[in-house]
Image (cartoon, rainbow, N blue to C red; front, side):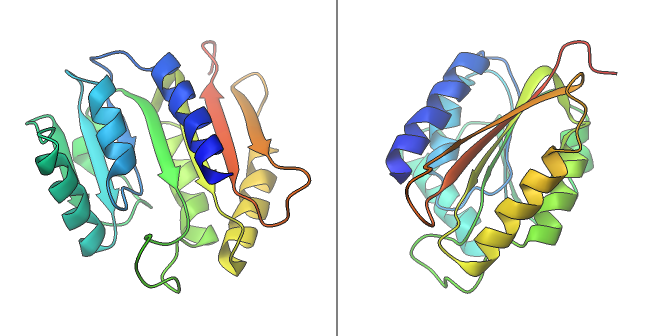
Length: 189
C-alpha cells in the first residue's frame, strides 16, 4: 500500500521538476526522498530539513554513500515550522512532507498537527506558481489521524482560484496512508 503511494508521489515529482528547480524536503527522515529528489534536480538546490539529528545524519550518510552529496544540497537540523532565511532567497518549486515518525526509531516521536499546519501555512507563499506541496500522511497512529483531519480541514479553506488540492486515499482500507498534492495555480494572487 505505502509503496504504491510512494510510486505515485515520485511520478508527480518527476512530472513537475526540472534539473534547475529548488526543492525542500521538509521531513528528510532516512533520506530516501532526498536521494530521489537529488536525482532529478541536478543543478537546483535541495534543502533537507529534520528536527531529529539522527534523521539529518541518516540523510547525509545515504547521500554520501550514493555519491549524491553535492554542493547544492543543504542539511538543516531544525523544525520545519519556520523556513530558514537561506531558503527564502530561492524560488521553491516543490516542498515535500513525509509525516509521522522516523522509520526504525522511537514511534512516539512524531510530527504534530499544530506544527505541520503552521509549516504548511508558511510553505504556501514559498512555492512558485505551478509549484507544489506534497504530503504523505500516515494514519496508523493517533497523531497521524489528527494531522490528516486538520490538514484536510485547512486545505478546504484554500481558494480554488489560487490552489488545486487533491488526495489519493485507500477508501476500503482502514488506517491506510494518504498522499496529498497541492498546486499553486499560475494566476495565484
